[in-house]
Length: 220
Figure 1: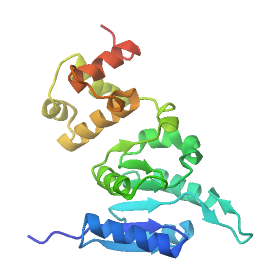
Figure 2: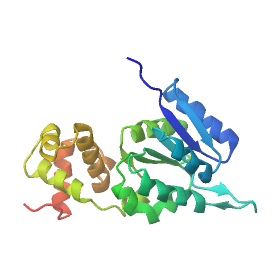
Figure 3: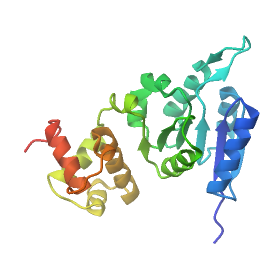
Figure 4: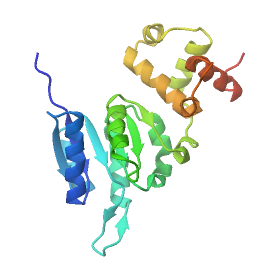
């Protein structure tokens, strides 16, 4: 059976950085097809043609005056949240705080959403690509603190903690796929901060339920 190559859309106005991103994406998948959009407006036109497996987006773009602005990239993000709710997104930027206004949209986005700081080593870029493609949520601390649980996550949390259901049982109860349940649980761990520290003596699912009780998200 032929497997379709992954398709990446890199939105970056520095040609060398954009090409470098594509080179690293091909390290993740040598058969990947990497398309470069030099502006968010160009990326919008590409999205009208096809939906990639992952979009890699810088937040700051040069203005004719020579200064930098996040206005056009944030407009692109708003379009994605409103129109492409299952698109996997990797924000690759040194200024993640620009996204604080979009925390509510991130909270309800169905695709993967990962933020990697450009100041980090490239291994974190590749790890972020994998996480985003897996539908995971990975955010810096300043964005995590603004997150709230949505209704579906609260429902999964109740079934996990009150009824002690397995992932598969939760999937069957809610009529959703196992992968979607696993993504909900991963998002819960991020939002409740369970993934930030190593649980040496406590199962991560138990820690998740303990944290939910502590924050009054569940009743005894």
